[in-house]
Structure formats: C-alpha cells, structure tokens
Amino acid sequence: MDVLLAEYDKMYELASFRLNALDRRVPLGAGALAAFLGSVSVLPHEARLCLVVGLPLAVVWLVRSTVNHASSFEDALTRIAEIELRVNELVGEDVLRFQSRHPSRGRSTGGRTSTVSVRAVLTAAHVLLVGCCYAVVSSGVTERGLLLVYLCYIAAIGAWSTWTAIRLRLYRYEPRFLAGRDIT
Image (cartoon, rainbow, N blue to C red; front, side, top):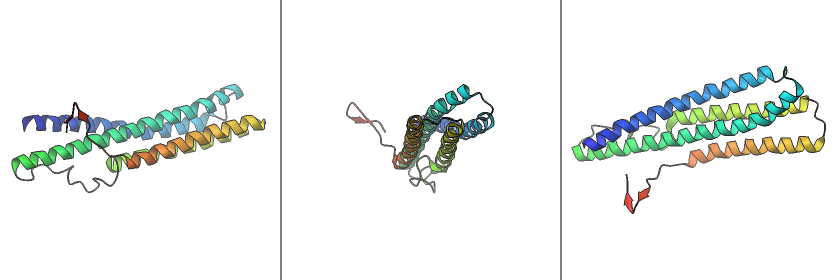
C-alpha cells in the first residue's frame, strides 16, 4: 500500500508538470502569432523570407511538443486511475476516486485540458502557416515553381500537424511489458 501511495504522489507531480507544460504552450503559440503578424510587414525582404521558411519548422516543434505533453499527461492520469482502483480494492472501499471516476475519463486523451490546449495550439499553428503564405505572396515572389514548392511545404506541415492532433485523439495508454512482466 505504501508503495502504491508513493507512486500515486509522484504520478500527481508528473501530471502537474505536464499540465503546466500544456498551459504554457497556448501563450507560446499566441505570442509567436502576434510577433509574426506584428513584424513580418516591416522586415527587410531577405529577413522576411528567412522567417517564412523557418517559422513553419517552429510550428512543427510547437505542435509536436504539445501533443507529446498531452499524451504523457494521459499516461499519468490513467496510471493515477489504476492506482486508485488498486488501493480501493486493497482497502475494500472507495477511498480514492477522483481520476478513476472523472466524467471525462476515456472521452478525451489527456482530459479537457489537453484537448483545449492542442486545439488552441493547432489553430495558432494554422493561422501562422496561412500568414506565412500571405507574406510570401505579398513579398513579390513571382516565380511559379518557387511559389508552388513553398505552398506544398506549408500544406505538408499543415496536414502533418492536423494528423498529429487527430492521432492524439486515438491515443490510449497501454502498459508495457518488461522482461515478460506487466509493470502496471
């Protein structure tokens, strides 16, 4: 029982870390959006082109790290629920039940917080990608081949980020086996 309760405390610490990390992603995405929109029109042509090539790669990092924190948050919440059920079983009554009986349990990966954070970051990412397209088109680049390559680059990142968010919705924590033993 002591070991389970110690793990329970540590899992809540981990869940808190992941929750804070998710909460920081939304202002990060919004800040990047504001900085981009505020600076793109005043930058020199060469700097603007560097920004519109590099910013989509930053979008990949932002979306990927947000989804990673959301799936890790799901892992922690699921393990907390498992521990609650095991402790309740050992005690013979429901003494722990917040995560194991939470209304959003099993409805959304990482709970409502992860869902909202991922959607907000994905929206900011897509707005940034559209802004990059606008900046390239308005910068005077007229070579069709170059524009087509850039638009495909943006479309690929947009599609990847959307797929990554969709894939998160399908994610479920599955205990791993270590040397043939279930470690849950």
